Image (cartoon, rainbow, N blue to C red; front, side, top):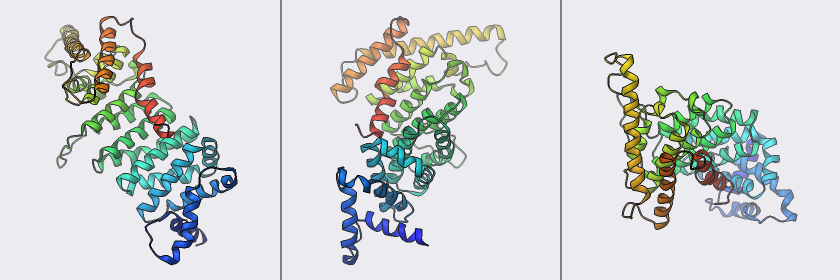
Length: 363
């Protein structure tokens, strides 16, 4: 009973929508505390503000929970050491309340909760807590992908999935399972009563970027061919899309696949190779010819994109980024030992660095 009263008191502090004048004076004082800039005289209050924000995550009003999550994110971004100390005390509570927000919240609340879980994983680092985050979050995140199609929400969920897998995944099976969940956002398993929803360019870009980042952490020989057949054909089709960010993301993913030397695991089987109509002796020959043909097609696509004159896409900066990327990919495909590791390039200049900087409030 006492805890519930405390939560209600904290919710009043976070809820700016209440116009009751009798509450206004007390809530204004607390609200001022939430927005006071960091200084030595308020350092003592910061822990209590975080405690109040966590308590407010129990409230029924969604706007109150959204404000509480924003306060927690800001606190983590402004003082990482304080965040680490706070997590030591409130790890389980914060994780489970964020997961509740993902299960029942608005798109905005889901985005904020995903952001918070990503920060939580980065704060605790590899270990038992990170493993718990991954295990507890897998089902709620998977279900959240299926509820609504808001691009911003979906992008936040994808970033969260990639980060918690990177930090908390102990073995390749964990990573490949997350990659499957991510891939199904654009290639869902459809039942008889399920209608496919065409994903937006922003969602496709986020999916391919998150998927290819996790792919950089895998050894090619550990990948299951049954899971990823036809993925390279899909990625090749994305190189012809009008949206430049989609083309760049697909190019990065293809570069990683080629570097891994596991092209056959991502390509569909040739017709007849799995139904017994082709002999074992000819199967490898047909498979090799198919792979070489697919590689040749992609090589031509990459060559065209490396010298594109414009007209496809929008900003000049994006056009330059595309040209530079596909020039690197082209050089790698033509002279594999010429270029540096694309796995390192993906991590350094694309998805993961961007996500971490965003989570830490540096972008």
